Length: 386
Image (cartoon, rainbow, N blue to C red; front, side, top):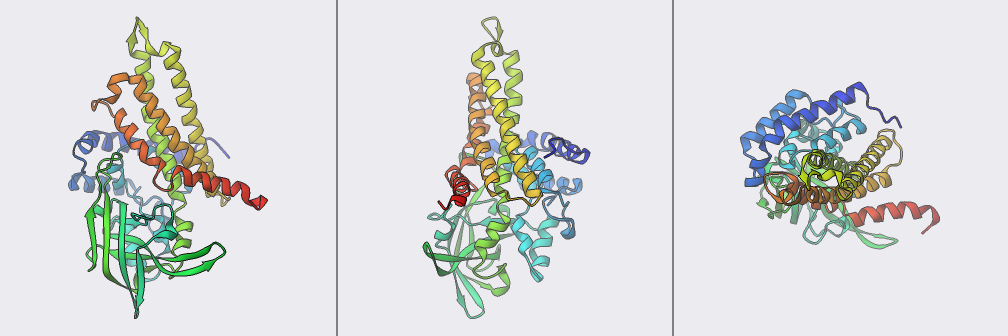
């Protein structure tokens, strides 16, 4: 693995970081205070991202995306992690699972999403089924040539601004060596479809402005053409296309941790107590040493996993390791940053307290820390038949 960045990657990093610092930072206090992003601001951020040529940069050139490889795209996500998610969501990274679209679906969903004409949201989690995807109760039964969808989804990020959602539902059962399991199918469901309602979600501690929603389906009738991929194969396409989302979490955690560190370091060098900078005290200087060591370690884990993914190598365990370590690292680094700033670290005048609150969800969504440890340990023990 080459640890140096190419000239193109250096340019990408600078362009995205400049965008975040110029276009995102100035609006963060507004979003933090109100919990909302004004629609006109979101539209403006999307327009500027499209002008930069970065919208849907995670999609191949053949469908209109920028065609960034996994390593370069991970660098993009790392820089976006520095900013408020309520605002960076408009930088436009549609769900990669849309590459499973076929035929007319490409014209109705995939291509408009890549061009920024439509926004998608991914609907998997339910009140009684989070990490256990096979335990979902939302179901779709066959009725003639249609499917009738019933059930509830919650914690669905940015569904409030989505034009359509990608919904996973149980469509049958199968017997396996581990007992009866549900067959899962993915559906494309347009906003405004009869029987489909998008409701305001919960007030969240983390990532204000990046809203979650509750989706309800009541006898929501969908034609066969709305099936994404194959019937009963939703679990397969989820595994194929959604693994990279954990890499995204790891990358954004690294970016946010670096921003917190870059604020804490000069403060420790300039803040005077007892006649000298607080950074001159081992109690603070050692914190800085531990913080940068953990950030660099998480960064290397994340980029190594991205490199393996880009080179077609097995990367599931490595991605899980990166997500696990980076998300838990962010919690420790932001906590130490608050400690260095002291009382000011808790005040709304600085974003440090927000970084600390935002960090908490990273160990939960896209697979909890416990799920990541399960993935890692299962991969290690499998060759031994355990």
